[in-house]
Amino acid sequence: MRKKIVAGNWKMNTTPAEGLELVKNVMAQSAEVCECVNFIVCPPFTHLSQVAEAAKGSRVAVGAQNCAAEAKGAYTGEVSAAMIASLGVEYVILGHSERREYYGETSETLNKKMAQAYANGLKPIYCVGERLEEREAERHFEVVKAQIEEDVFNLTEEQFADLVIAYEPVWAIGTGKTATAEQAEEIHAYIRTVLAEKFGEAAASTPILYGGSCKPSNAQEIFAKENVDGGLIGGAALKAEDFVAIGKGF
Ligand code: PGA
Image 1: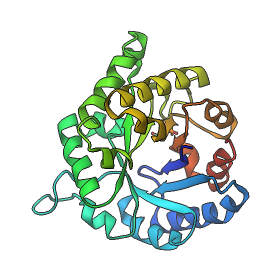
Image 2: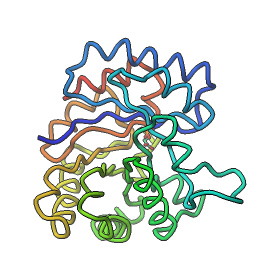
Image 3: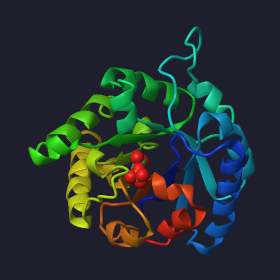
């Protein structure tokens, strides 16, 4: 049985007070959702500590949205994996398309970030996904395969066991345009095949989340697919009711 995960990527939203209120509401309302669903919230760095503290001992786990590629030192503005882990945070989103696109994250940088995450006991939620023009040129399989080969194939078996993958087609992020359940299943199944080429049977246990305009009204149909193990939620994670309702989609 694979872990079922509903992860909220708050991006650059919420003040500390708003974030604290949001996580408290998620914690309270998640009581209505099957215990089999793992909720994760990923707030901005400014209130990661407070949110982690508030969620301690609850069923809601906490993740960061990024970590530095280096361990420590003269890297103004960066936040290390060790700093994040010291807060009791369990996960870190890496390779989100917004980071690849706006902050020039390459597979080389991501290799270093993955290494930092694992060295400090953080579990990466590694994002892959094609752009619109790549989908239109039917290059989506190739693009996603390369993203996996570049940053996942070098993991040890032990590291791989802690990995979560998020498939997020760039054309579906924040656009209101969702991949169909069939499109999601097709590429999730493909991702699992790619992972199995390298890691064999262990790939059957890797949670693969769908991301991109996932909301309460479409979660159920998408999560019903065999190789979709949950979602990485942006916009709809900012309202506790919607975020929790997505968890009822399993
Ligand atoms: P969205 O974002 O749900 O707002 O489309 C998803 C993501 O970028 O993780």
